[in-house]
Length: 513
Image (cartoon, rainbow, N blue to C red):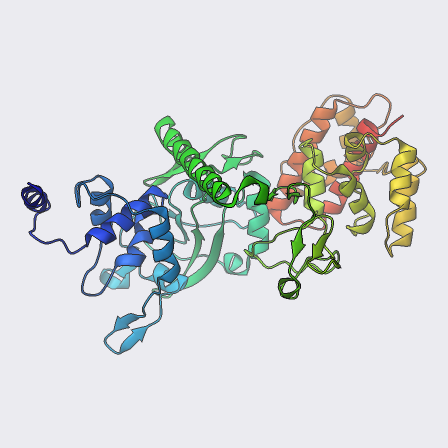
């Protein structure tokens, strides 16, 4: 009977013998259960003498190919992945290096008559074309990045007509000169969490074509958290064939179900490991706040391992883009009893400003107050908002600042005076900022039309009076729009005005009486 069933299954698959073995089908099923994409699975099973295309993997997913063959166990898949080694790609002349981003992008185009180059496939759910790009107004690119990160990832092509796919080229080298940090800042200003992407420029038919390669986010969705041009607050964008648009219910449901399933599998894996190790021998590390629970015992690390670990020390942090970082709070101890220096949570100027404007509760408000002296080079950052969260009076905040060890003696003294009310971020400007302040106090809260207007509004907000101040929510929202406008325009220098304005709003609305 089993032989007869196999024969029927083989006939249904269209051949007496499959090119993909039962073991490989089991491994592919296990990979699909982990939400691995078809193209990623192909990497492990494609050979020159036996390609495994995406359709074959879809057939396995739908149980049309290799029906009845169970998925491999998690242990078997882990073992397969651990020992897997990719062989070199072979060409006529021997091994060929994998294609670079530039090579993959160039392969998307083909030449037509009169040496006219076009995108071979046209726009898809993984390819978006834009005829031009304005580096001062990056919201359209940010929108496309959000849509692709929420789907399968993809590439945004700049200097290519969206309807015809014809290469027209970039009209200037502005995109080529655009610092990736500026593009990242524009994305972070609007999207949370921040997707991963790369940029570059290639030559196609003598014309410059820019591109942005977007990776699919693992823990979807990416959400718009600050409004902008066609970026609505709270929107979830999704890349559909030929357009990035607000996600449809069915796709959102699928996305959230996949996320829940992935988290459930992770929880099951952790539970299984705890059961194997024993609760009394297990430790729980909270990677969000750095706390480590070890059944009430201090954590110990063998000295041989300690010598190989690079701990992050304050003032010695070198950030490497894309590199994962474990931040340790407090102290850990080597097996011999010697204490090993740990590191503090890394806080940035952007963290302080964003948490203040968004009115977010922070895990360790004391660290944000300490940062105002030892962590930043700015003259003005909010402190009273975080002091409120820590339930500190002015005197207590001054005492906390007094205890901070730092070489910035003048900055420390200034911040202590500010905590005590002896210094203020209040600044009354003349000219346009003065007129804007009068309008704001009269109830006119018009948002800035450009970076220059945003800078002037930030200067105006530095003069907000303590008596008769406008609504806190309106002033914070207005300053947030100024931040977004300045970041998109790349006006980094003007951000000093924003930070002083934030300092003034902090004094007006959050300083203890």
